[in-house]
Image (cartoon, rainbow, N blue to C red; front, side, top):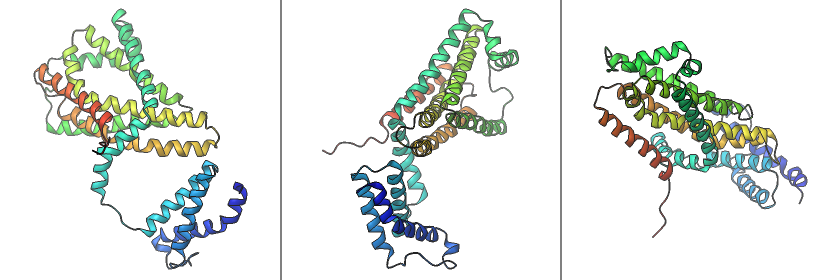
Length: 325
């Protein structure tokens, strides 16, 4: 059967299921509008809908139709089986397995994002190392002087109390999540926005690191950034990868419409962005309460190295199920 005939034959049933689900999902309207399907009729209609979804997949009907039917099946399943797992177990499952699995499923986009960041970082660092005055051109005079003021001192936590740490914690969350969201949303401009943010941030960090090394304050700088840099920079790279996936969906949607391709890409990338926000929250906590502490450099570098190793291990091994014995 052709798809058009299939849709024409069963569209009425799908519409009745859609109307019934809309009514069930809005408790306030349950007693004000009549149901399209009665409680006795709905289970049988749901079984037919599941059969239609299986047929649509088997016959290779369009992605739009399969997604439409799949969405109805999921909504129907939620109404038939009202069990809602508690929020905390769902969050723990997502952190333990869902997020690293979502990252690995899109590893090509994250690799492209990482290359854009690392290559621009290396280029700017080498450029400033060869021509130190270039730091003023890349960073701007005020930012360059600000970096010198911040990292030129031997003690980063002078005059800083717990209230300041809490204030900076809020500031870091606001700033980092803003960057991640702009990177992700920038992908909608055919991926160019996401790519630009990655190149800009890589170049900025490379120029800053090159200048700090040039003025001889490298220990202050690297002991400050090494621990929180692991979740923070990784999260920004992942946001860039998610943005690139959105951009390619808009640029080259393939056999489906741009809107359908974008919806599909968004469903795949939203879990990554949830994880990105979680990592940025962790980064802000470390940056506010650990990074400014005046401790021996060996301790800071050891903790920083562990931080990078744990992030890499988590994203590589998290959520991988053991093969049955």
